[in-house]
Length: 181
Image (cartoon, rainbow, N blue to C red; front, top):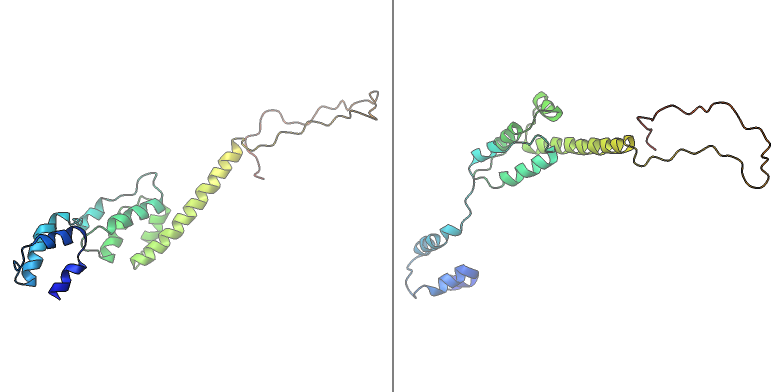
């Protein structure tokens, strides 16, 4: 097995292993000690659990973005524990309807929390999309021009016919809100 070991190595590890002097290693324990000292600097350091307490939802950050950012950070901590992660993700939430809902009925597991957060994030996105449509309508974009009174012209029009002299019933001033089409 020790002869086949070198075949399993790739890249830098294979080059390092090939440069070792023949018969310089007497046991697997010695090989593992040497390899650790050689490659310890390339090891990614994991963040401590307490790092998750520093992650807070921004004032204008959506719930969906906060959960995604928190999950990325949670995957980089040393001792991942669902209960600890649940407590820290909750502590970073900004106050609002969702936090009130969580306080009222706390989730038992991280999976339950994520499911509820996803539902709330979907509702938040829908509401924001609906508000942007209403704002677009009230600003006048997409507003249809008013039809002018049709006046008979062309063939068969009789210029001698009396026109309606009643005042028009058009409202004075501009409309402030429009019914969405």
